[in-house]
Length: 320
Image (cartoon, rainbow, N blue to C red; front, side):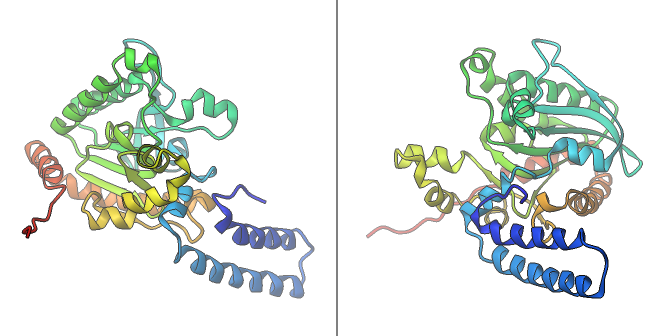
């Protein structure tokens, strides 16, 4: 059985296993009929499961172990990708991938978080939690993109910036804040896609874009549900309750106008079909690029400023 995001996925994985087992048998009319019947059951079960997901279950999907990461999208969407390394100050942070390539024939800069698949990769990428040098590397790539007038595509998927002592000593908060300021001034199109977890300033440091889109089962919030629960209830076990209070799902964020579009995922989630997910994402990225190419450099800056300036609202009520 494939790795599942949560118990709600178990019935789907079991049906998928039964289909795979039948596909390994010699071809016959009976085999084909059984496969078609199981596929029909699988589609119906997927609709049932995915139409009733809680916010916490969406959070688990955003963290699904087989979810596509930045390198997956690069391999599927970007041609002739040339990766650049290091911040020219301290080190090369593997939690952030940066480089240049061609997206549907157009030169672009690509920046994104990378979590890693197995234990070795996860340790190598620090579980997708960047150090200051990761954000400084990202900014170095963005400044090159601006110099050569290349659109910037970012893929956000991190629990948050690494909170270790070393990272703080090397200026974690300053690196994030500096990126926020500099991205706000960029004179090239910036298209952000939250592909998994959008956690805190660690996500926002590469997410100041003209367009901020989010995958259907991704999340975006100021803190993880576990972190929120630990603060409010002194117990990370209240994470499902915290997820409800935080309104961190794609639907919530669209209603709050934090994101511009929700990008649909394949029937079983992005982690079940990387190629199909990349194909869907490709259309959204291309359309956004064509739209933003019509704006002048000054208009791109103003467009980005207006977008973030209008976020947030409050309600006044008379007391007594």
